[in-house]
Length: 326
Image 1 (spheres, rainbow, N blue to C red):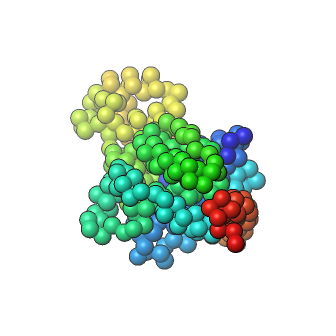
Image 2 (cartoon, rainbow, N blue to C red):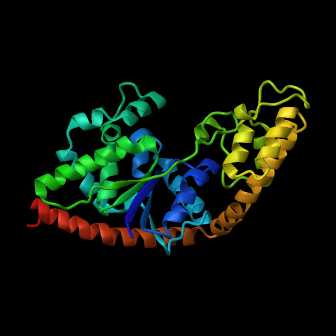
């Protein structure tokens, strides 16, 4: 079994795109590998250091989404990044051996500066976040990291840092390999990429009526004005969503859309039913867990203890290699 390490920034509740693209993969991986899944609260500070009052609740909400989606603490170690001292310790040390040029050429940092409109206010933490990301992986000697193709530059920086450490101090870290996943691009109700910040997301906690209202606002074919006008399913986000969820009636849906016999209202009603069928059990389990928050925090603390033990042993080895064991 390979050791897999993966984390998610604690920026709020999970939506259906997170579930379809990440959480289902986590659930699959926990049955096949030794998994360390962490709630990346430290990474929130790279762009939200002035909003720390939101982090605790966001961390709890994501934990609810993970657990209710089938991430099993008996199979995977689920923990909070900031509660593991070795993450900080290795981050500081790795920052000493990482050339500035490696970080400045990272395309994701440039994208974040643009997306968050940071301008000249880029902090050291944002520039150096790939080093923290490397420490998150290497402190558990992670062998594989689940990523999409667009995240390959992140992982390559981690591999470069691991190579440099090994060259300086002896073979310590494996160079983590990509666990490549083909994540579908899931659009929100406005046709853009689904995002909480764009107010276009369908959350795993949404009630049935809320799902119905959100789906009713979804963008369809702009050329289909009247009920019986012929449609163009290839430009319709509702049709695309049906396809992602697995549409047994796909051929009929295409035909009926194109000949005008299937109206958008009916198509959206069917999508609402599908989404509620998928989200309903997650929502029910989420509500059950949320009725006793202390048990959720207990689950996370058990995971924290496991992570501290594993990372602590590896940190002792790192200190020995570097020469800090006095």
